[in-house]
Image 1 (cartoon, rainbow, N blue to C red):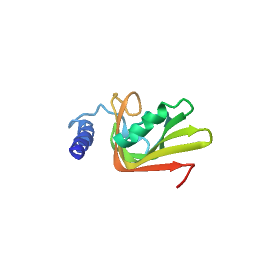
Image 2: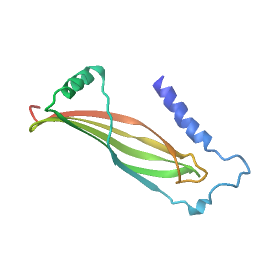
Image 3: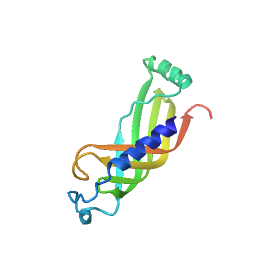
Image 4: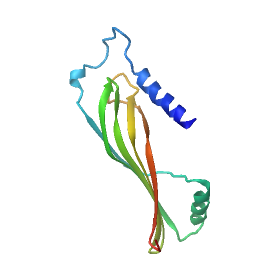
Length: 147
């Protein structure tokens, strides 16, 4: 079911961007770049499968435990598929570190995937946009105590 919803989402973004025949009221394509890059850094609110989430919730109740969560879009490259739509590939990652003194547990999540960005305004590169990614996800757990 999730795969079907992802397919419908990406298809609707691409099909929505189709210019009607004879429509000449879009940006001059000669003013567009041949490729684009996308990078980002910010805070994140993460959730996990129920068994892991119970442990994370328990860590959150301990006053001495500090938490830092971070999200990064690293290595995103895109090319035009429509005047207001670009597609390409992206590596997105998030990290969640819990520290107690010098000891830590870190949970990292990555997605290596295909990405589509569709601008909602009248011209490319201005205003709000929709972004959808689909790909392979990886979860990694590391700690300062033990393997």
